[in-house]
Structures are given as structure tokens and as C-alpha cells.
Image (cartoon, rainbow, N blue to C red):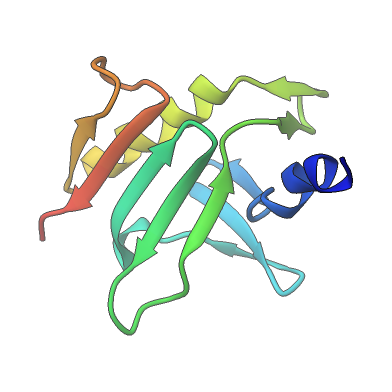
Length: 115
């Protein structure tokens, strides 16, 4: 029973915030800008958005896609909003998007860098 309740805490992902210029992530108690071009694949699973790094690039990043709380709105953020934010941004950067649940900009998708 204890493991069942600790699992969401353990798999919570990296703290992040959405800004005008993109996403900021918390690394070693400092906020840095997430540069999506440093990653070759981005995958939304319905629970997390996973950034897979290029060789010799920064470490992989996992952002939570569920149970995200908006401090600005003082309310939970719906997971489909986060899953919809990144595909638009990634397509502008040259990624090719493939939806895994049949509809564009849903909760499950894969974006791969073609360049």
C-alpha cells in the first residue's frame, strides 16, 4: 500500500514552467530554458512528456503531463493543454509529429527531429 501512494511522488518528473519564450525547467535549484532543438525525440505518453537527448547533448528530461498544478491560475492544469502546447512549438522547430491516438494534438504523440 505504501508503494502505491509513493509511486506518483517518485514519478513526478522535472519541475517546469511555461514562459513566453518556451519552457523553463528546474535544474539544480536554478531555472534554465529548455531548448527543444537539443533533443531528437519528444514523446507524450499521457502521463509524461519525455525529451530524449542527442548524443553528447543535455540529459533526458521528463515533464509531468498529469497532476500538474498552475500556480498562476491557482488550479490544476488539464493534461490535454500541456500535450497541445508542445506539438505546435515542435512543428515550428522542424519536428515531424505523429499522433498515437488518432487525432492531432491529443494526449499521446511522438515528435522526431528531421534535421
